[in-house]
Image 1 (cartoon, helix red, strand yellow):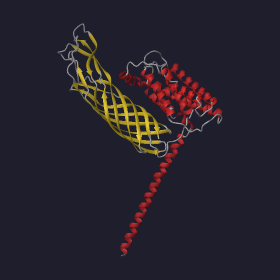
Image 2 (tube, rainbow, N blue to C red; image 1 turned 180 degrees about the horizontal axis):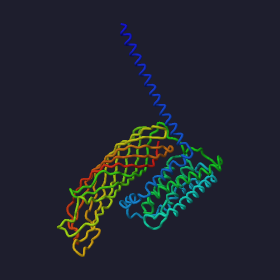
Image 3 (cartoon, rainbow, N blue to C red; image 1 turned 120 degrees about the horizontal axis):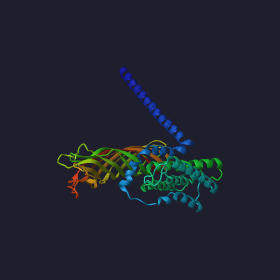
Image 4 (cartoon, rainbow, N blue to C red; image 1 turned 90 degrees about the horizontal axis):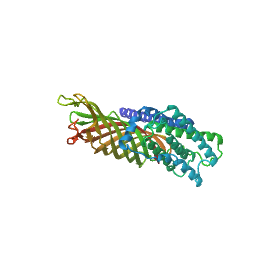
Amino acid sequence: MLHHKILCLTLVTLFATTISSQEKDSATVVHSIHEFERTYDKITENKAFKILHIPVPLFAISALTYNQGNKFRTMRNTYVPNFRYHYDDFLQYAPLAAVIGMKLGGVESRSSWERMLVSDAFSASLMALMVNSMKYSIDRTRPDGSSNNSFPSGHTATAFMAATIMHTGNRLPRSPLYSIGGYTIATATAFSRQLNNRHWLSDVLAGAGIGILSTELGYFLADLIFKDKGLNLPDRIRESAPKGGCPSFLEFGVGYSIINGSIEIGKQIRLTSPGATHVSVKGGYFFNPYIGIGAEVTALTSPMAFDMSLYNGSSPSESYNIIRVHADPTGVFTFTGGPYFSLPVAGKLLLGTKFQAGYSHFLGNEVEIDIQDKMPPNIIKKDIIFMKGESSNGLIMRTGISATGIINRNLGIRMYVDYDYTSLNAPYRILSNPGEEKPVYGDLHYSKHKMHYFTIGAAVTALFW
C-alpha cells in the first residue's frame, strides 16, 4: 500500500513538473513573438523608414539590373517587337489630373488648397531636380538609340509622383481603390516606356523610386511648414492590417528564373537556357486569415544557346563550314490556379505558400547559321534559317514560398521563390540542304523538353481585407 502511495505521488509530481515546464516554454514562445512584433513595429513606424522603405529597394533593384538591360529587353522583343504607341505621354499625368478634378468637385481630402499646392510644388521640384541632374550626368543611351538621356525615366518618375500624391496627399477615406488605381496607372506608364523601347528596366525602377521619394520629401517639408494648419483629415494612411483579416490580394511581380532543362532533338541537337526574365500578375481570395484560392498569369523569356559540341555540320562529305550559330530567344506563357496559404507571424509580416497547376504555352523560335564554302573563293552565306520552331502547349505545376511586408493597410511588398515544372513537346523543322539556293525542311521533330526552374522575384501587392 505504501508503495502504491509513493508511486502515485511520484506520477503526480512528474505530471505537475511537465505541465509547469510546458507553460514556461509556451510563455517564452509568446514573449518572443511579442518582442519580435514590438521590434518590427518600432522599425516600421520610424519616420525615416516611412519615407525610404519603398524608394531604397527600388534603387537597389535598379542598380542590380543596370547591366542586365538586354535580358529584360529580350522579353519585349519576343512578345511585342513592333509595339509603338505614345499614350504614356498623357497617362503619366492621369493620377494628378484625378486629384485636382476630385478637389474641384468638392471631394474631401487631407489638405487645404494652399497646403496641397505647396506640397505638390515641393514634390515636383524635387522630382525634376533629381531626374534631370541624373539624366545629363549619367548619359545613358536609350534602347532605341535615339538619345543619351535614358536614365532615369522621367515619365515614370512623374507618374509615380502623381500616384503618390493621390495616395499620400489626399488620404481619401472612401476606398483604397483610389490609391490602387493611381499606382496601377503609374505601373502601366512604366511598362509602356519599356514596350515603346524608350527605357531599360533599371531606368523605370529608378524613376519610380524618385517619384515616390520626391513626394514623400515634398509632403514632409510642407508638414514642417504648415504643421496642423490646413489639415482636413487625420493621418490614417499608415493604418495597419486588421488582426484576423483575410489577406486577399492582387499583385504584379518581376523576377529572374534559373532553368534546369533543355530542348533536345535526337542525340545531336540541344538548345539550353542560361536563365530567363519573368513577369507575373497574381490574384487571390482568402476565406479566412490562412486559406485562400487564386490564379496567376506569367510570361517568361529566355535567350537560347545552341550546343555545338553535339552537332558538327563540317563533315568531309559537306562543302561548307559552320562559322556562326544564333538561336532566337523563346518564351513560356502560363496560366495556373490553386490554393494559397498564409501565416501571420507579426502585425505587418505574412509568410505564405501555394500549390498550383495549369496551362503552359511554349513560343516557337528559330536557329540561324552562317556558313562558309570550303573551296575558294570561300563565300560566306549569312542568316540561314537552320531550324524552325513552332509553338506548343502543355501542363505546368507550381509551388513556392513568400514573405510579405505590409506597408499599410492596403499595400505590401512580397518577396518570393517559386518552383515550376513543365513538360512541352516543342516541334522543330530542320534544314536538310544548307547552302542550297532553295531551302528544304524535313518533317517535324518533337523535342524532349522538360523544364524545372526556380524564380526569385519581388512583387507590389494590393491587399483587400
